[in-house]
Every structure is written in structure tokens, then in C-alpha cells.
Image (cartoon, rainbow, N blue to C red; front, side, top):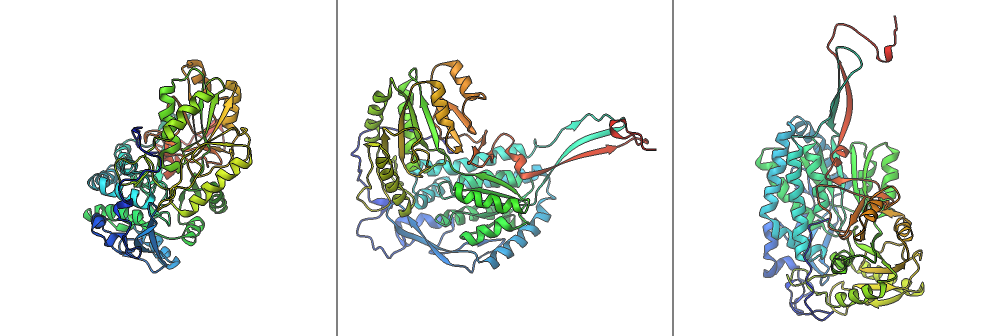
Length: 540
């Protein structure tokens, strides 16, 4: 889930230092919004102000609670957003449904042209929008920019798709008959996204939903509202320039009340939800109760398996990126590392050395490889996971502590010595904690990979071609993403992204994921003067 990031392991002390976080001097007044400071004047290029409306349905508004967005690198306030009330939500759904009456009549290739323009508009704001992602979410700048690039890439993909998707003309058993598979838009697609990819996941859904003929209603994460507002400004301008209703791409910033309303709302034909398995399960039940469609992208407890024939020069940087990248806050983050017993100690030694060279600091500093966790609550979850790992028999080989500096910084952590079925190993902790385990055989390693409840991403490192195909086969990995000699994270947009079991079963982005956003009709046309029945039935 994002463009590949090149990792350099030039030595710097673990705790880092260098520039003040997010460009701030330590003496900066805590009560001042960052957007008011000259160093952050670039935020205005995204249409952001000190106080921002968080509802868009052709016009900007919002009458709900005012929330403040904080920079996780120093916990200082960036700017404020006024969320949607349920009344705002109702008005927005109505306007989006009205806008669909116009959008659905536009030919798919013409809709693709609008999406092409959205991609071009994002290109013009690539760096500045990527920096906002780093500022508000906390991921390093190359990852923030890469996430915006992912939205651009899926726009390009969707433009081509707008001239290609559709169903076959099937042979009919009846003379003078045509059997056609017709695909039509659903209507209104609801999109609920998470904090860790506040641009890309919306982009995956938005670009495909638009070319398929749907309108979109987006509720971003409550902790990244500025990114939601900034993206919507860019998209809204494209719609306005083409004299189209802005409500085609609506926004309703909000909390659980808005999310619950979207789950229950029969006017939302498809609800795409990205988030935790626990919340996703509740969303699934509510949507299913009304027989609505759902697309779930939930948790992942992803594993890399390293066999004794693996190229360790590939293994070490791959594990480092997959376990440490985004401070362990990707759904595809590697959380379990299975090492063949003959190479276990050697790999752990190399990994610990690599971990100690990771450059920790301000996400907006181009030299930084590792930024903060997103919230203070995430720091508490990290501490709890490390403590549980110790209690269950694990040894902290590296890290394990909160870093004494402003912001939500913790040490990237390696834990060894736990059994494969320890409860903490089977728990997805959204933090940079890697559990390293020894295995003896291929069968054992494959079984351990599959024994957790989630089934998102997985990878093996080996030179054995037969093993590669067994891994991809029916008795191999049970995940939606099954890799060989690459990390668990860093998926391309051309393939369908998603997972099995408690990951939710949804598929976004490439391949035939577009089918989620359309309804299929089988149409039979009789162009003869006879009326034969199927299966040779005579009814006379």
C-alpha cells in the first residue's frame, strides 16, 4: 500500500536529533496553531485556514463539533475543522443523490476524463499535499508524497478502465436471441477511511467509483481531517471547472455518529470501510442487516518467512522496511518474522544492527526514516504490547522503550523467544513491534503463517522454485497478498488489494476490483419473431 521507499542505513544515533520537530523551535508557543506560523504558510496552498469547514456537498459548511488536528511529531495544534451534524449529513446525502442523476448520464469515457483531470490536479499539489500527510499523520515525507502518488496512479488506471470495463455477449441456446451482461453504477458509494493512509485509500475508492458512474460520500479519520479537507478542495475545483455538481464528491468529517448513519443508510449502495477488525465487524453486521453492499479492509497480522537458502542481503532491508516503515502503522506491516533455526541468530544480529541505524526524527526532514506514532493512545498500546510480550516469555532484543522527546516517538522493537501461538503474537498491535520466531520445516512455517485470524499479506524468502509455487498454491498462504522475495508491504495499484478471514474479504484498487462499484444484469434480447423457451420447455 504505497510506492516503494528506498531505505538507506547510514549511521546516526538511535534517538536522532537534528532539526526541531515539524520545523518548530522548542520555544515555540504551545497555544499557537502551526498554520499561523510562517514555516507553515504552505498549508494555505491547499486551501486550509485556521478554521475550516468539514462538510462539502457543492458548498462548504458544517454545524457540528469543532475538532483540532495535532501534529504527532510534537503534539502541537495545526488547525481546526468543524465537523458534520446528522442534519449536515442528511443534506449531503440528498445533494449527492441529486448529483448522481447528472453524473450517471455522462458516458464512462467522459467520466474518465474528469478523473484524469483530478489526477493532474493532484500532480500539481503532489509535494505540498504529501507534506500535509506527514505533518498530520506522522509518516515520513517520502511516504507522504508516495501516498499522493498512489492516488494519481489509480486515476491513471481508472481513465483506461473507463473505456474497457463491461460484460460479455454470451451465446444463447435460443435462436434469434442475444444474451448480454450489462454493468451499471450502484448510485452512492460511502467511503470511510483510516488515519494511516488518509489520501490513498480514498483515492482507490474514489477514482474507480467515479468512472463506474457513482457519486462518493467520504468520511475520513477524525484525527486527519485537514487532509480530507485539502483533498476535497482539489477534487471540488476540478468538478467546478467542468460545471459539474460538487456533491458528486461529497465530504462529511465526523465521528462515530456519522459513521453509524452511513452504515444504516439504505441510500448508500456500497459502504467501503477501512479500519480495525472490531469496528469493521460491527459495520458489517449493520450493513448486512439492510442487505447493503460492503467492502471491508481491516486488520493484518502479517508474516515474513525466511528459509535457510534465502539471500540475506534482500531479507534485512525488506524486513526493516516492512516492520519499521510508517512506524509499524500499515495494515501490511510485518509483525511476525519466522526464521529457519539454522539462520535465526545470524539474522537477528543483523536486524538489531540495522534497527540501531534507523534515523528517527521529524517526518518532514528528508533525512528521516522513522517518525512518530499517530497518537498518544498508540504509544500506550505500544507500551502494553511490549510488557505483555515480556510477561509471556519474550526477550526484547532491540528497542522496547518510549523515546524521551516531544511527540509520540517510540523505539522500533524486536522481540525474540516467544512461542508461535502466544496470545500477543496473535494480536495485531498497530506499532513497530516485531516478533521473531524459529521454525524447523516448511510445513510448520506455512501453518504458523495461516493460524492467525487475519489474512492480509504474507511473504517468503527462498531460492527454491518449487517452494515458491507451493506457497502460492492451495496449501500455502491463505492471505490475499502472497509475496516471494519482497516485503509484505508496498503493494502496487495494478493488483487487487485486500485480504481474507478477519481482514474482511474486500478488494480495492486494480484487477477486477471495479466490480464492487457496479451492479450486474443479465439481459436477454429476442430479436426474432418466435418465442422459444429455455431448456426446450413447451408451454402451449
